[in-house]
Image: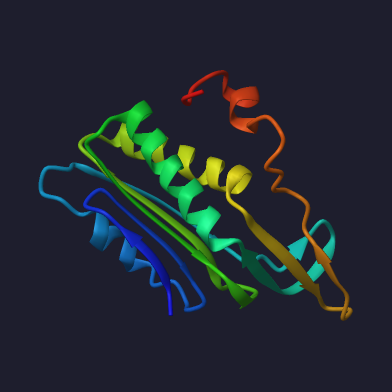
Length: 165
């Protein structure tokens, strides 16, 4: 059963089920909007020179929901309240080619939609407590380094102070 959090402006879902790619556009559609931007991430075949067969995703779901809600609220503060934001992340076992994360943003103008979409995926990748156990063709597995809740936000370092403190 998916872990779903919805309000009128955002929908956040953590799920073992495959991601329906049309879900973001359906949630974000609004006749007031002239733009929709999305990002889809899927399991790639090669990572750091190793052949990958799949990834198992794990999350501390209560904290993850809180962090993703904060990220959506921050995007609204930075890029405007007239946004609809959809976030879905797979949990459990996935295979090469499976969609694992889907972000969608509906907005009045394309700049806000594109920038907010980029902000949400970058912050999710850095802050959300979601961990990846990569499985390799040789039978080995390894945790992918990346998420560190105690480091400074990478986005501030890269883009200056674009997000809320």
